Amino acid sequence: MKNKLLITAGFAAVVFASCTKGDSSVPAGENVKVPYVGLNSGTNYFEIFKGADNKTSVDFSGQTTRINMLKEMDAYMKTGLTASVSAEKLVNMFENKNAAFSNSALNAATDKTIISKTAQSFAAVDAETERNRFKTYFTSLAAASQSRSQTAAQGQAGLLDGKYLVNEKGFEFGQFVQKSLMGAMMLDQISNIYFGGEKQNADNNTLVSGKNYTQLEHHWDEAYGYLTSNEMYPKKDPADATKWLESYLGSYVRQVSASVGGENPQDIYLAFLKGRAAIVNKDMPIRDQQIAYLRNNLEKAIAIIAVSYLNKTKTATTDGAKFHSLSEGYGFVYSLRYGYNAKINAAKSNELLSILDGKTNGFWSLTNADIDNVRDQIAAAFGIDKNVVVNH
Image 1 (tube, rainbow, N blue to C red):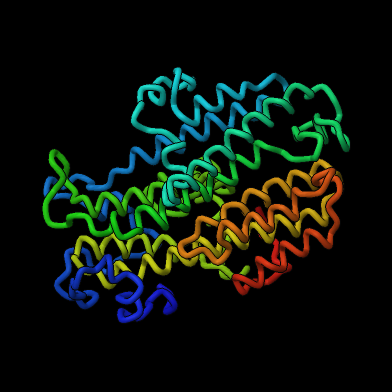
Image 2: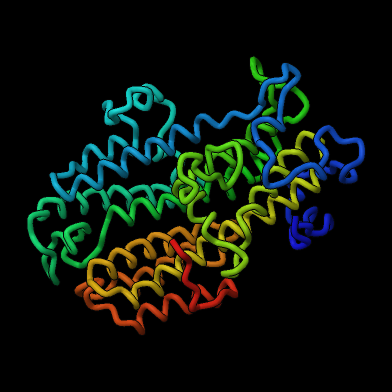
């Protein structure tokens, strides 16, 4: 793994003192159950971590369930191009109520909801504000779908380029929802909940009743499950080498590499592997190094994608393409508030969003100067190239 991954143990101990509880570090490669030196981008996450029963000790089924819920919600929002969308149905999907999913297994998972994992790290009143934001998006999307037979124009909801459903201000709410949940659910759960002090202070000595993993091992795997459901990351589609099998946050992090100022996805994967191995090895300083690395670089990846989408709006050749890119970028600008000790916190994120959405005619009124204003502030906060464009 890159040298930049190896943050000094002293630094990690300061940042994650609440997590380590004085655990001493086992020298890498010496008397460990899972040797660090053997971990690489081809390591199978499920196979390398096994219990005494020789079966994988990895389980993140809850995360896979919630991501599958989002996939159904996403697919339903897209039907607004040809049919009316129900805001009530979207709220039911968000809250997993009233058998809203076509997949009966999702309806049966009554203890799993998207809403409960949205902005979970925020104070209760602030979390409620963010959850209501999504409900407002559902209502706005449903309203826009009533104008699907119209061609959108300033002051008129409808379709642009025959494939983008926007409201009278050019906002594509399906993209607002999808991209914003990558921060509000996925990044928040990884960086603030599962890598947070409460989860990382969990028991790591005894197995969970009826399971072959400790609670701490399980928490780490749950964080991994919000990035990918695959046994390695990133993973190509065996049926089509031009395609990849990640979705949502994992898909976008995959597209950010060192060549555009981020980290290579293989290094992100190695950090997840090494952190999990450190937990098995009871090597908390090494674990904390990986937490620091992952928190920083997952947040940075979202910033790079946000800047990239804003840059793409200026080269779009149609209003549809421009507003689609703006709507995606908008969701990522929103998502920045969910970084750990976020460089763009909720107040700053709201300030940037108001530049994008606050004009009387919304996106129709935006100038390149407005877009550059938001882009430049994000780029400066993260020390990234303001002209970056990622091939997404």
